[in-house]
Amino acid sequence: MRLGDKTIDESRQGEALIVDSNGKGKKLFLESYGCAMNFSDSEIIASILAEDGYSTTKEEKEADLILINTCSIREKAEERVRNRLNSFKKYKRHNPSLVVGMLGCMAERLKDKLLEEEKLVDLVVGPDAYRDLPGLIQKVEAGQKSVNVLLSREETYAEISPVRLDNSGVTAFISIMRGCDNMCSFCVVPFTRGRERSRDPQSIVAEAQDLYNKGYREVTLLGQNVDSYKWNIDKKGVVKDENKPVVRFAELLEMVAKVNPKLRVRFSTSHPKDMIDDVLYTIAKYDNLCKYIHLPVQSGSSSMLKRMNRGYTREWYMDRISAIKRIIPDCELSTDIIAGFCGETEEEHKDTLSLLDEVGFIMAYHFKYSERPRTLAERKYEDDIPEDVKAARLTEIIAIQRKQAASRTKTHVGRVLKVLVEGPSKKNPEEYCGRTTHNSMVIFPKEHAEAGMYVNVKTHDCTTNTLLGTITTQEAEA
Ligand code: SAH
Ligand code: SF4
Ligand code: F3S
Image 1 (cartoon, rainbow, N blue to C red):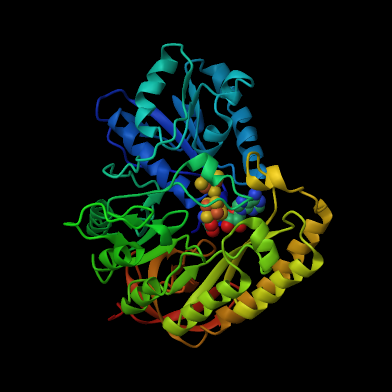
Image 2 (tube, helix red, strand yellow):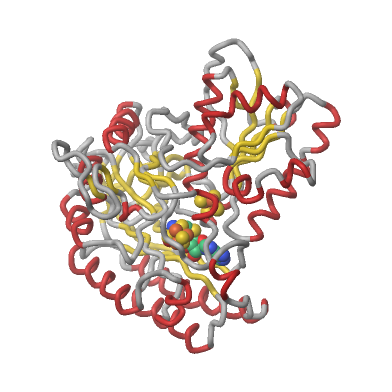
């Protein structure tokens, strides 16, 4: 799991048990693209529409309402959605009352373009307007155009209890904030998600507790820059209400860690410029705070990082890595890399390769730079690295990263690791799988393991990203 990544960049549709509360009996097909935040939003959308009497279906052809929750992060992500929207035309021919809606980041970016000019959708709803969905759908049913792409400074959907669309029943996402106030020059997110705002910590803790009570054993706290989470204190550091505690990310982590020692806590995404030692000490203090940090670096070159407007240098990033290694010795790291950003020299690219070697990430997501409309980079720099050079650099990045991942994974062979069982492995249902605190997938013979249980697994072998082992004890003590 992570933001804007390949694991969940792939389309996924969810089915949930939704009570048809007012007998409307309509069926919703909801498909999500993009980052974990979008998948988390889809659970809020499903909740809002369940209240309005919609039940979800996995069969797009039997739907009365098709909603696509979209991503704009790279051009390819948008192309995929366009193709998907085109493929729904055939259902419209059979069922003229079918409503097709585009939600999420592409909706925010393109506004009514796909409705007015291309007639691909009936409904366009941006990320901060989901409470309006029932009314907007009614408008479409009454034959009117229906668009709401207003961004909000306050909306966090804090009290909406999401309908869990992932059927695992073991792991779940919790949104802790929305939007982003950074202006990385390559990134479209500030334009599609609006200003940063944090969610009431009590509602976050209550959601984690509720998930634990329902049998979930892992939550991932989501935000574009979790280190910038703040409650009861403004952006200038002024406390809003002296009688109430200030909650920053370290405190929030501690509050969620205390929900139950058997509830694992992950988070994504940390920002190198804002990650402070307090957060690291808190992670070290609690066993259930997972020893895995996703810390996107984007480039290993300080001059490139300046053009990217990331707010740190290579030296600063490496200092953060040293702090992690010092404060949380048994911690694994992952990152994001962009290949071929504007003006990238061969030397700057080599700096990225050397950083990958120096840090040793267990996992990295790597992307070819894709120019996005309205971003600082689009206005200021030329997208001048030829496609074949971007591709060649990406190949070099992948080769080095694969070696590093294999060598990091290998360090966990021969250990007894506490694994949270997720269920049968995809390849062989006789075998089960689960993750370690370091986020490594472990495959082992099922024995008595059940989803949601902690087991100790002795590892004996590995592939690049996966550990193989056998259960030693059924339920881990700690
Ligand atoms: N908030 C997160 C990133 C969210 S987007 C952070 O700051 O780390 C997820 C990843 O997509 C980014 O880390 C970046 O590597 C990649 N990305 C964003 N914009 C991109 C673009 N225009 N072209 C290629 N990759 C991009
Ligand atoms: Fe985009 Fe930067 Fe914000 Fe991440 S921190 S969402 S990369 S602007
Ligand atoms: Fe996420 Fe894509 Fe939007 S990465 S925030 S869904 S642009």
